[in-house]
Image (cartoon, rainbow over all chains, first blue to last red; front, side, top):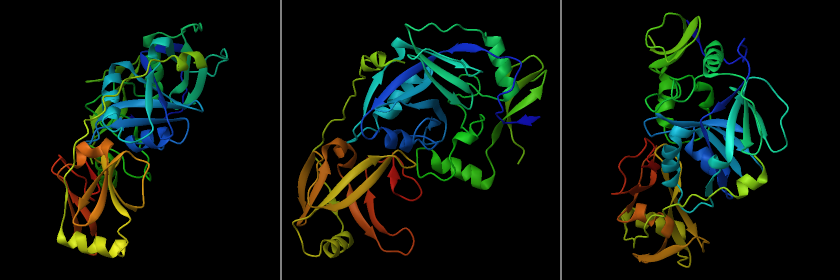
Length: 230
Length: 126
């Protein structure tokens, strides 16, 4: 049984289009606002997780610092929950939210590639995230089966598979996105208690096939979220 | 993602919460501590606000200020000028400002009938 590590090595390499939203966050308080609502430090390009007060995942987002604004890239089926989560927390802050999802497509590449100037590319722990306007042409070179294999080999959880509203970040392999020293954020008390007591309940593992209750099935191994024994 | 697609991204309309005409109370102990903090200079005001963040989603923000840029409603409570930002008025109507005198976790406390829950330190609520 293997536990999470992200070395990004696999025989399955390529580019796949993700089902993603792209939200544009403007305003003087954009960093402070996203930082205060999510598990990781948000001071520039980063990846972080929005969680509920009971520390369940709302969505994991890549935060791309575009200079005058931030682009939040998350999982499209979770978009409305993220927007609802953020809406309620905008009180007097200088925050404006736009939705650029219709005008852009999001891809994940397992390799660093050359792209047109209009395409934004950032290295993340999952690979390279590409945000491309609809006018740009990006060719998919990896199908879902290859992507799953890449994720299984690198123990990369994905929204809808391991990253779901039923799990907390520590259980679904996102512990590296839960900052240990940052101040309070929604769900922090619960996650800090789990860590300090060494009781996170469940964890993401890679097991040799066949795997019962697999969250992602690979050729020889699969991912699963199993209850920890401590 | 070129500049054009970002600039033309449709804005998401935020439903701003209703502005509520706030009433609040201050306990005797809190009044004593505020008297001490104001040092008799009643030209200043107590700003009672809410910030997003904290373990439960919202955090109280108490400040003694001369003025503020925030759009506020001004109350007079027991001789104190109290400013409440309209943006967070829906979260603060009916609160009681108390002062708890103890070595750990002491200080000003907000008893809020609008709060469904609060975090362990008492500074954050939802």
